Image (cartoon, rainbow, N blue to C red):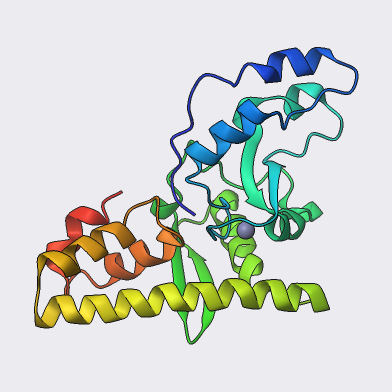
Amino acid sequence: MIKIERTPTPPPSLASEKMKANGNYRESDVMRQLAEDFHEKCYLCEIDELQSIEVEHLYPHGGDKNLKFDWDNLFLSCAHCNSVKNQGKYHGVILDCCKVDPESVLDQLFLNDQVSVQPITDTKASVMTAKLLTECFEKRNTGIRVMECQTRINALRKTMNLLYKTLEQHSNNPSDRTLYTLRRMLSRTYKFAGFTRAYVRNHLETYPDLAEYVQL
Ligand SMILES: [Zn+2]
């Protein structure tokens, strides 16, 4: 999870759709702006090439139109993470990545082929968000979720292996090419950037020249 700079002006359809009896908060202008602002990634697992896109309400709307059509309450997610988040314990307590930088309160770790997100601060928002992000990769409680979690672990492992390999090349023989690849992988727009950035931030003694790319 990374900080998202949300376009401040709500897409126009939200106001007009809100007036209707059965208005739609997923019109094209909303989807276009969400895709752009969220770099076409699920805001929770950060997988890209989304195949099953949903608009997630950070605060569940429960039929309340003010929450349902509130631009600041709409987040781009995959169907899997939306369903994992849909548990009572997460209602109203997940941090707003458009307002708080998740990297300042969470350590997003991938260790021994497992995701383990740790809260850095002990606020309820960071503790519960760490739990949710871990569950998006590890909650294998149904046959479908076993496969959906594994898809995400496989994609994350591939990204991290490329990161480790490029870091090694960069240490042994730094070049414009290795630096270019690392800059790209440490950009917030890159898939799983919360994990790539945390890894480098946790190993800055080895890679001091990369500090500027993982700043908060
Ligand atoms: Zn997701």
